[in-house]
Amino acid sequence: RVGTNQTLSLFYALNAVGGTRAVTMTFSGAIKPNRVQASISEFFNIAASSAADGSAGASSTSPVSTGSFTPTTSGDLIYHCGVDDASPGSYNGSTIVAGSGFTLLHADRQVGTAAQYQVQATAGPVSPSFTVGSDRWDSVAIALKSAAAGTAPSAGIRIVHVQHSLLAWTDNSG
Image (cartoon, rainbow, N blue to C red; front, side, top):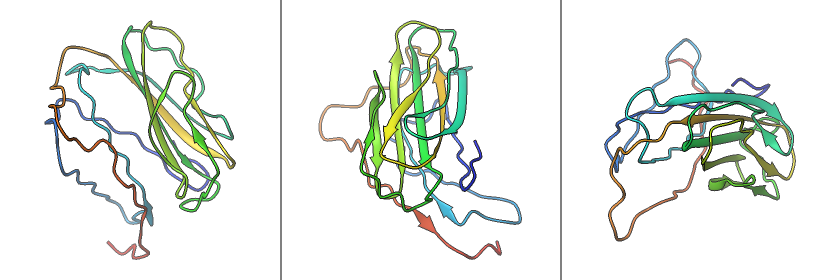
C-alpha cells in the first residue's frame, strides 16, 4: 500500500523457526528509504503452506480501515497494521484503540504505527479498523488460514512486546 508520504508493506513467512531472534531487511534499488519502521509478530497454528486467504489496503482517517475483504475459511487469523501517513515519524497522537473484536499487538503514539489481530470464527466479510486521534493513515490487512502447526510458546518468562524504533538516515547512495 503506497500512501502520499509512506510506503506500507506487509510480508509473512510460513514455517519460521519459533523464537527467531533476528530478522534482516535488505533494500535494493537506486533510492533507499530514508525512514524505516518495522513491526514483527509471531503466531503459531497458521497453515504451513498456501496460508493467504485474502487481503486489503487503503488510506483513511479515523477509524483507520482497509475496507472490506472476504476470507473463505473459518478460523483465519486476521492481521491488520497501519502507519500515520500525514506526519511520518512524528504522529504524537492522543489515542490508538483496537477495533471491535481485535487485540492490539502494539500502538506507538509517538511515531504513529499500530498492529492488531483477531481470529475470525466464521468465514465471511471482514473490515478491519482501529481508532486514532487524528491524521490520515495507511493500513493493510491479511487473512491467514489456521492449521495445527508450529509450536506454542513455552511456559515461563517470555517477551511479547518490544520498543519500536524509527530508523532514519539520509545517505541514499547505496
